[in-house]
Image (cartoon, rainbow, N blue to C red; front, side, top):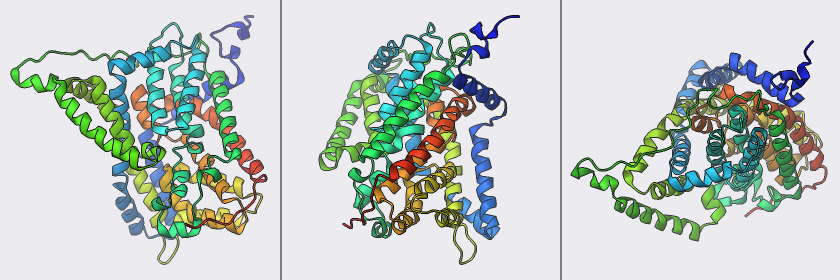
Length: 479
């Protein structure tokens, strides 16, 4: 009988994590619906929950309709994240930098681990940069056909910054809000006070957690990635990788000359640079670049400059638009979910989000609070995947409960941050811009991200509980 453990093409020769990822991937490829269906089911579940607490069906429907367009500014921001990243990547200079980085790994599994390292490292500074840059690196690595990198595993590794560490870094929405009193609603500021970075993301305990998650995530990415004999490459998946080369055409008629003249680009970029200089010179640079509008304008200007001629820039934008179709149609559904959670209630009663929060707070104690609230925040984050917006919803009762139970307030923010990232590993919401860049579907990568979640969930909850014991409560600092 043939020894299957020695056959490199056999799943029996793979490690435990690789077999787990392969098994979940096979299941998801068969059963996991399109991300749109995933969002639609979430709408139905939340609507049913609101009806269950006594909210009239008319109120539920009104909340859904009112919320449907509430994320339009954010939807546009996320679409521009994908478009600007694409436009920058197709420029000659950026393509050469990414190609240089793509030459570093020596094997397909090492390439997946390298992408995970880049994704997690960049996410500590800015989650949007992490998402797009890592996706573009995966595409470049996939062009190295001799590596036989599993394209699905590479895509999942590119997503690890959003699924593991971003909320423990500088672009953490909750930490940024709490450190800047002018950004907080006055009613919330009266409850929480100012909680500086030194009490949240720069706590030694928080940095230790981020370091542990980074090491574990990279190790899982490497161990779960299929070897060369079992890898499915971009070609195997039918993903084209050659569309990034944009030919520079010549003007066909006199009216085309401005489209091919860099003069228009230079003037627009000059105006943008003036505004950017003002932003960074009058604000904290970290806060400035963490603002999505600033980030998007910077990258659009860079894209204009690197593509140099307006015609080439417009061609790059046209090629990028298909990558944002999922964002445009699905984000409004999440806006409706958020409103049904927070605004649909029985007459004179509390909304569904408050019912959920009161239940979890009621079963908490000083020692169990981090674990219980971590689980709750992760569950709610699955339905309301918005770091800053969800913190505005949760902060009043989370901080009040932390004060009542004498829990370190900065650690309460860290509990939220660490738990907030967990549902991202299987929720298609934040995957959409990356999937558009990669030309994949959520079902292609969720087997690998679910494998990460299986390890992350108990590890994060344990660290939230264990490290809380090393901290002491301090009353809130009012501005």
